[in-house]
Image 1 (cartoon, rainbow, N blue to C red):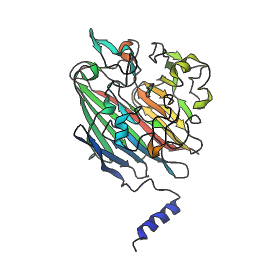
Image 2: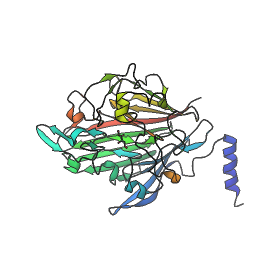
Image 3: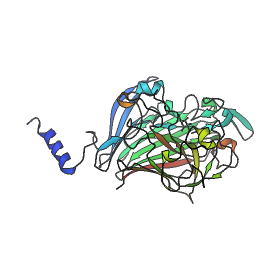
Image 4: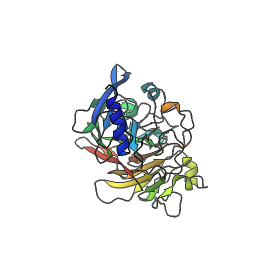
Length: 375
Ligand code: GLA
């Protein structure tokens, strides 16, 4: 009698040919994850009717795990991360995190807005990266999981002057896992003083499953005719350069490893791919930015966004020192990021689309990671 449910589950799995992702219920469930600065941190499991699952914590809005099926129906966790909150707090190359106020780099950690120069926290040589010393990836967000469906709403007030940025910025980020296998991220913000912002998400994908080899055989398509070349400090020069005839051309899907080691100044500066592509998009609304495909497992991730750019970072700084989930050290290029964004260093590049937000305006941005299976 006692064993009947287990046998039933096993039989159902056999009949459908599927390995269930976990026993979390469809919708949202929550477990305690720890305490930071006297605030409770939770791990929320969002699960849809297909068994796809996203585990997200309100510390940094980090996507801790993302379980999707392969073509046989076997679920794997396809994002890099850690087994405990303590490891995220100790040191992380932004695994799975929400990034703000300003995703990517601002050169010399300063910018001038309406005649006032703002000095920011420098945390990447002389430059600022991903919000500074304590960006949105390192704060505890207020969380609400009562919304309809598998939805998690995160809120954070970034105070005037935080990391050097002007204005009290009220930020809301909604993660939603839909039954059409989309992890949708809606960002919104308002400010009480003119400021700059550029919010993004920093999951490291490995479609074989996190911790199982590198990503060099993944095929990538990027919907972009141009990219923003960088200098040796990874700051854009301001130019929008054609990808034509270069290893930056992903308009036809190509394996990431096919050209990553060719002699090319941009690949030398980035130590591989670590660049912003200028999306070929027309009008407003969601447009396809990139498609990542793994022929071995059949897993595909499409990235759709309202943003004008996408950073493709090929995990060039991973070197085995981050001991990830299951105690596996994450080696060189074993995960890659597809970060939708405005262009890096826009506050200092008048030719780039503006990242200024004024009082009375509403910042809105949406990115969808859509999981599919190829043949
Ligand atoms: C980004 C940057 C990279 C690197 C990683 C984190 O995406 O573009 O240069 O800093 O974050 O290691």
